[in-house]
Every structure is written in C-alpha cells, then in structure tokens.
Image 1 (tube, one colour):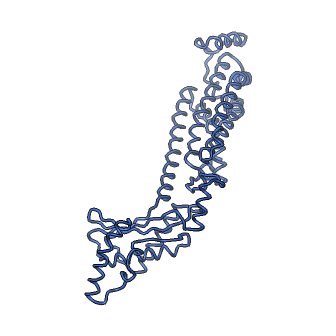
Image 2 (tube, helix red, strand yellow; image 1 turned 30 degrees about the vertical axis):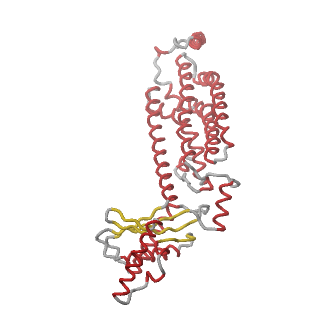
Length: 375
C-alpha cells in the first residue's frame, strides 16, 4: 500500500467532477455530438523584431501549424487567423503589384484579426494564435497530449523548411493549465503531508522520550492514509484536490487518538501494571470516546456524500473511510504494537522512581481520573 500511494494520479477530466447522469455532462455530450469538441488547445506563434519572416511567411507558418493540428486524430477542429482572410492571401505573389495588393489586403484584415483575438501586438512582438479543439469527455491526459502536440508541430514545421529564428511557439490551453495546476497542488499537498508527518514525529519522539518509540507511535497515524490511498494508487482511481486534502486531515485526527491512548497506556505502566493490563485499561478508558468521536465526525461529514458535485461527495465518504480505518489503527494495530516487541521501547525508559507498587495502582489511577490536574 505504501508503494501504491506513490502511484496516485490526479485527474481534471470533467466526468470526474459530476455524476454520469448529471445535466452538465448530458449537455456536454449533446454539444460534442452535434456541434464540436469544447476543450481548446492553444498554439501561439510570437515573432519578435529580429524575426526574418515577413507577414506572408508568418501566415504560411500559421497555416502549416493549422494543417499539422488537423492531422491529429484527437483534434476535431482548428481555427486560426488564416480562416479570417481571403483565400488568395496565402498565394505566392507573381509580381511587385501582386505583393503590394496582398500587403494591402492583409493590412485591411488585421482589424478583423485583432477583434477575433487571433492576432496581437505587444512590446514590438506580434503573436498569432491557432486554436484546436479536443473532447472534454475523452480519456485524455492533457499534459501528455500537449507534449505530443508540441513534438508533432515542431517536426511538421522543420519538414516544411521554416526558419524559426526569432520565433517562439508556445503550447497552452485552459485544460492543460488546470492540469498543471492540479499536478502542482498534488505535489504541494504531498510535500505538506510529509512536513506535517515530520513535525508530528518529532513531537512524538519528545513526548515518548525515544526515537524508536516516537516513530512506532506514528505507524497508526499513517496507517489510514496508506491503506486508502494505496488502494487508490493500485486501482488508478481518479483523484482530485478535495480527495488529496483528506490525507492531512486524517493524520491530524488519528494522531489525537493515538496520543490519548499512549498517554493512558504510560500512566498504567508507570503505576506498575503489566503491558497486557495497561493496554487493556487504555482500551477500556479511551475506546468508547474514540468510537463516539469517530461516529460523530464521520457521520457529520458523510452528510455531504449526497452532494451532486462529485468532489464534495468523494471528500465525505473518504473522510468516513479514513476515520474508520484510523479507529481500527488505534484500537487494533496500536495495541498489537504495544503488546509486541516494539512495545518495549515505550516502557524501558521508565525509571523505578516513577513507578508505584501494584497494589497502589488502582487507588492512584482512580484519584488521577477524578482529579485530572493532579494526574
């Protein structure tokens, strides 16, 4: 499961955000079946002041990019500045008169291109936009798809013999941009989870006065995240930002129960009880409260499981699952660790001065439970 958690992948496909019978997905399907695909892939050709291409050569380059995009099977339609110009605009001029007429035609058409946002001029640079459209409902990894498009267009331009000196070609689009944002957020959330784990582990080490004891105490805390996210990694279940956030939340909730359990376990050990009795008494004392808080928090969040927005519903049932697994980790896995060889690290540092005689343990603990400040 730990290895499976490293295989978790984020998804920005629209069908992962809404149920299959939702109105918005139905509308998307109808539009894509009867009109065109809806996700734009943008190619922007920027020519600076040193660009050797004249206006006609730049149009030829834009036309070549449009042609190369039409060759990609996933792209259903392409639109560029070329589609707003007269058909003869790309013809090679035979004389100086033809070149002058063509120059005037292009100059007159620039206002239309500016209005359509397929041509822009800024800081001495001229940018031409080519837009391809892909399906919003297809099984497309937009990040990889954008890389493939870039390789295909660059290869096509090289084969056509275009001199791209002083020319910069950018590949972007709203869905690839969202994909990159999601990927970065997934990376940041993973980093924040590791940071939180490290800080909590240091606190556990200080509280339990031992490196090994502190690290062992962290096992039940990461247990829920590894079990659930590891399963998602192996099954390639699509994850969104809301889903990934549950890991840090579950860590915060699980460590609270773990610390309570270990606190009472150490109290009973300090009172002279055996590890078996200390684990039993800690379960008896903390178990009901852990179960009650899990039920209250889990069912309170599960109310959102009926939301139409899938990430909200997924967040709800994932939190209930994580809280349930965390409860198992604290009431089954943690006692098993304490009763096994690793449990020695929680008791070996206890000095005799901190222990009381076994026959005094019941009275001492009863007094501590009735007088928390004294405990």
